[in-house]
Amino acid sequence: MSNANVQRLVEGLLGMERTAELLKLLNRPDSISDCEHGVVTRAELAQAMNIALFDDLLSRSQNGAAYVAEVQAIGGSVYFDHGAIRTVRWHGNGALPPGESSVTRILRPLGFRLNGRYPLDTLGMTGRAYAHEDAPDEIAQFFLSEIHPERFSPEFQRAVSNVVGTSKDPLTPKAVFELAELERDGSLPLTTAADLLPVIVAAFSRQHDVPALADYEVLLRESAEMAWIATEGNAFNHATDRVDDVFALAEREKGKGRPMKPDVEQSRSGRVFQTAYRADTVEREFRAADGSSITKAVPGSFYEFISRKRELDRGSNRWTTDLRFDAGNATAIFKMTANGGQ
Image (tube, rainbow, N blue to C red; front, top):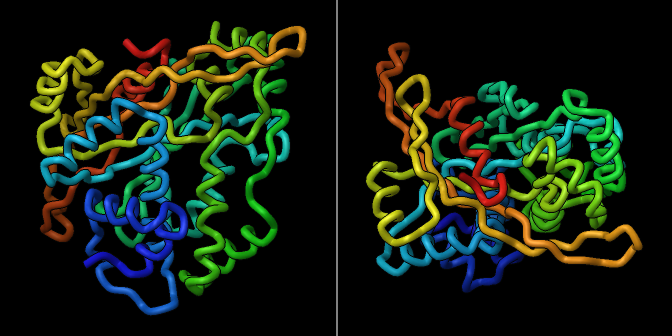
């Protein structure tokens, strides 16, 4: 049985039919197997948000949607491991808080806590993982990355300011108040949570105006990741499916002619293995020098796969899933949006 609160929240966004499909498809956290009528916990709201964001990713990744459709056709399931968000740690970010703070102000009230820091120095970025305090192995984590414009050229920095300086803040004063209450109490009335959910889901998108093509080209010369942010903003860069054997899956997908990453990335610990489709190509609008609108094909989002080994927690003498990430893996996976990936 699905959690009635999660079901009602997602139905309010996606409708009954799509909600039923997603609840059947995605893993169901045992921690929210039961619920209180009319009261939504932070874990329930986090799960509802994650379901909506996973669905949004599929709407922007043709390859991911095709894979998931095949899984659904045979009655299979998806274990949603994590979603990845890119942000810009920059003072000239318009009305949007700089860097990952624009996202963590949503995640923290929902129960997510810092679960690791990963320097991505070759990309001029820093990554941090956030896991849910109530159900770290069952509710999808977030991998948040910040790009540091100060590590790039003055011309690059000016282009960053031009692009993100027009950012609007998607959180209304009412939403900020409701998130504060959620952080304090750990729950919200169902009607309040239902009003809040579409606001926080909308925060995972592009908040700035259509970028100028000239600025985009400046950014692209120095950072494919910042160029990606210019067109996609804070939308999911990728969503990740946890599978038993990512090596076997990669070979099957290559055999189907899917645009898979050539190699599976392995963490230094030897416990985390990742691969992905190359980013789908999408059409995005830009402003030309004369003010007219032009369209250009650019890398969009993608669908990723991960296998995580279990390890013995000697403190509790229990086997647990290794929920860590790896900077080398992340750097290689990020290249999937560099001109369609490598």
